[in-house]
Image (cartoon, rainbow, N blue to C red; front, top):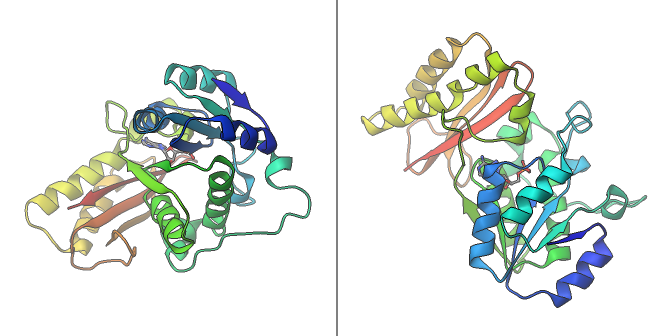
Amino acid sequence: MKIIESISEMKNVRWGMDGPVGFVPTMGYLHEGHISLVQRAKKENASAVVSIYVNPTQFGPKEDLKKYPRDIPRDLAMLEKAGTDVVFIPPDGDMYPTGYNTWVDLEKITERLEGAARPGHFRGVATVCNKLFNIVEPAKAYFGQKDAQQVLVIQKMVRELNMNLDIVVCPTVREPDGLAMSSRNTYLKPDERKAATVLYKSLQLAQKLYDSGERDAGKIRRQMTEFIQKESLAHIEYISIANVNTLDEQEKIAPPSLVSMVVRIGAPRLLDNIILK
Ligand code: AMP
């Protein structure tokens, strides 16, 4: 496994690599969710490249950029075991040199949900992914359904800018009790970790109501809210039931619908979602 720490070296190594190349962009502090993407990239391509980069431009001024968890030696051990060919760890000065001024800004779809809660977040995400795609030149890039809006933003950017790669969406990997794996779960104290199971349980409640014929999104949202409010450590930021492509909120569910949510458990914001089909 090669470890590369500059853009110029990554471009050089890329020329010698067997294609097609599968690419998994990450911010590190890896878990089984990330590894599932790497394994899929490895299976479907001749080579797998994984980037580890905590992208400063997707964090707001009051967000957790500085304390975002990092453990490169542990990440490298996990990536080696998963059969990664190249790990790309670019420095900030290489990615955003002094005077850097070029941004990818998607309209509308980035104004809702996570975009509304985190102004500028998707500008940072789209820009860094565009840069990484240009550097790594993958045939396919792998993203997790856990970040459903991010998937939509990246797919739209690739489509609308006629970029030469496919985006592959992989299912959310969960802990045995249903909590979606996330690097930020490490922020949870033991009692908060227990409380965090309300997210997936409330999504399962939505699925159950839908399966029994309920199509009134307001009723489903209300029952999810009541369920979550029984957990005193949980604070709902939003629960959305929306068209899976446009993210337009639905009053009456017309599948496939994305049920997505952010709940704060203590300080951490936890995200989760399911698709009603
Ligand atoms: P991050 O390091 O949080 O930026 O995540 C890197 C990639 O891993 C993104 O495409 C995420 O959607 C994906 N990912 C994060 N958590 C999970 C999970 N629990 N299951 C599947 N994919 C995930």
